[in-house]
Image 1 (cartoon, rainbow, N blue to C red):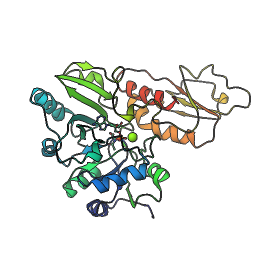
Image 2 (tube, helix red, strand yellow):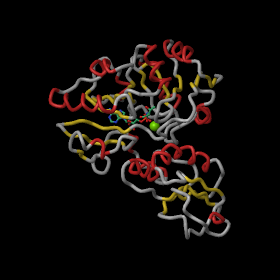
Image 3 (cartoon, rainbow, N blue to C red):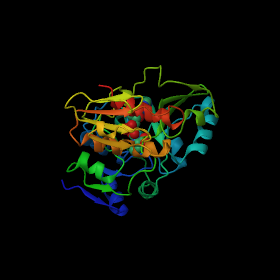
Length: 321
Ligand code: TXA
Ligand code: MG
């Protein structure tokens, strides 16, 4: 199959209507989309990604009205869910809710819950609205690999496996959406992301599922987001000395280090120490360093408040295998 990179949104809608899989930009990372109500189309996502069938997908809604078709809102949490939707949708925010009957089991991997999101990305929004049906979409990488933040990354991952990649440049946030479950008046954070716990805590008590509970969600696998090159976290690059003949790449936080000669290559997540900029650059720089056939990548820890917690989460997974 020939994979085309283009900006032709009409072609994307046509392919989706026919049950094909298309890569689309969102404000977080590029997604691999298929009509969520077409189980055969959704099965293709798993084939293309080589993703285990027990890993459920996020359903992206055409608009707010679809929320209560896709999910059943429990009366006790209804107000809180709607408030969160008002505040954080459209945007980089996903809620895990009891599943509605029309959602095929393959989408939720047999779970009784479904993850729902409303993207704010212009191209994505137009395509899903024109299709008029929700889109199931995981990140457009092969299973266990780094999420793509440009159309070229998607091509590197999936060339020859899908017909079309819609190109809208680099994604805004650069890391995947925050995923929460709303239960018994509380918010459990299942995956950290652009919407921070600080922001969420203004709406309800946060029960920190990331740290404690065993979630049936492989995005929680400790070795997710792994580059091929071995990776290690360090506090500061300053003072780091590679072993003899060892080619080490540095993923630096803010470029404050002065021992550049110790490294075969380096990237600064943000020269001005800005967490948003760091998140947006993270996966691109990891990919670039991973492509250099280094012996080791060392990454500096970033400040762990706010968005930094989500970045540290990705760095820890990437260095864990
Ligand atoms: O930003 C994003 O969320 C991107 C864009 C494309 O929307 N999507 C994304 O999807 O990151 P994916 O499939 O790569 O990660 C979704 C995570 C997976 O770890 C999956 O296990 C979890 O969400 N998940 C999906 N449905 C779930 C459910 N019902 N309960 C618990 N976890 C769920
Ligand atoms: Mg993913």
